[in-house]
Image: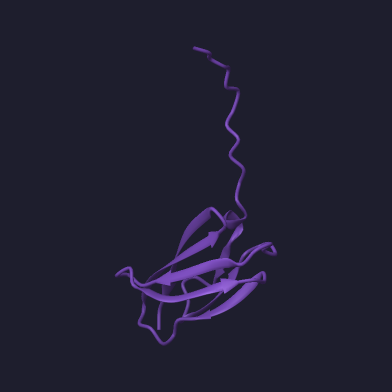
Length: 95
């Protein structure tokens, strides 16, 4: 058996950690700002409080305007998928 010394764990911060969503809370419309230009399309899924997907799209640019005003007020979950990295955010929509 061979044991090696561990001096640290390589855990790079993913680009998805830079995502900014504003305004939050909002009136049904908000902006997603990735904070970087994606090298590959970033998938965004938006789910309502029941976990049902209400929108899904790919982002190929830094920002995207989102309109949830056709849906009711509530808390929505955004899942941002960038390659193997998945980040989850909450958005409050008050109509």
